[in-house]
Length: 458
Image (cartoon, rainbow, N blue to C red):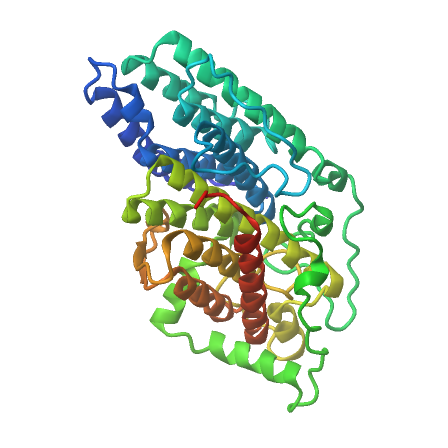
C-alpha cells in the first residue's frame, strides 16, 4: 500500500481543520478576562467539555481505529468524566458504580481538598480516552493547554493539584475496570477463517481487508446482560435462483437502488458514511482518507444538542456518558450477531451472480453484513439522547462539515436514526430488511440502557 503526498497533505489539512475549533475556544478563554481569578467560570463552560470530546475524536481518527474500538475509547473516557462530576455533585448525580457490569465503588474526594470538578472531569476524560487503547501521552499537548488555561485564569496551585489528584484517582479505577472487559484477550484470538461457500462473508474490494474484530462479541457489555436479550430472527436464507425468495428480492432491490440513486439519497449515504479509513485506489496508487466513525459522529451530535438546549457542564457530561454507553453496548450486540451468521455483503453476491462490474455507492467495510452496526448504534444512542433532551428536539447536524459534507437538519434524534437506517441501503452495503431489523434492535437496546441507568437524582 502506498500513500501519496497529496493524500498526506489532505489528511494533515483535515486534522488541522478538526483542531481549529479547539484552538479557537482555548484562545478565546485564555484572553477573556485573564487578569482576574475567573477559572471557575472558565472551566464550568460545557463547550470546553464538548471540545475535549472532539479532540479525542480527532486523535482516534488519526490512529486509524475501527468503529468498534473507537466506541470503547469514548465509553471509558465518558464514564471517567461523569464519575468525577457525580462525586462532585452527589446531591444531583448518582455514580454508575454497581450499575455497569464490573464497575465497583469510586473513591470519594477528600473534603479537605479544594477540587475543581470540571477540570478534574476534563483531565479524567483525557486520561481514559488515551489510555484504554493507544499509548499514554497522545493527548498530552491538549491536557497541557488545560493546565495553562487554569494558570492564566488564576487557579491556585493547591486547587490545580487537588483536581489533578482526584482526576488520577477516578481514572485509575476506571482504567482498572477497563482491563477486565476481555479486550486484551481478544488481541491474541485466532483470525477469521475465510470460506468461500455460498452466502458466506469474504473480503471485499478494493482492499480485500481481513475481517475486523471477529471476537468483539466476547467484550463485556456495560449494561446489557447477554446477546439473547435482543436476538433478531435469522437472516434470510441465501437464495439467488428463486426470484420469489426474500433473499433474491433483497439482492435485486439493493442492486436497483444503487443503479438509480438520486442526489438526495447519495447525500444521505455520504453524510452517514462515517468510514474511518476509506481506501482510494487509482491504478497502482492507493491512499486513505479519514473521517469520524459512527460513534464519533454521534459524539458530535451530543455536543450540538447540549449546546442547543443550554445544558450546563454536568448535564453535558451526563449526556455524553449515557450516549457512549449505549453505543458501546450496541456495537457488542451487533458484532455478536455478525459473527454468528457471517453473511456475505451485497457487493460480493451481486458481483458473483449478477453483475461483475457492480459497485456500491459507499465502500464496503470489512465485516459481515447482518446485522448493521451503524443502524444499531444510531437507534440506541437516539434513545439515550431522547431521554436527556426530549423527543422533539430539532437540530442541525454539522459534524461532517470538516470533511466537506453539507449539514443536515433533523426533527428529533429518532428521526436521525431512521435516516441512518436508510443511508446504509442507499449506500449499497446493507440489505433493506437488515437495516430495519438493526434499527429495531438498537432501539430496544437503547431503551434498556435508559431504563437501567440511574444518573440524575430526581
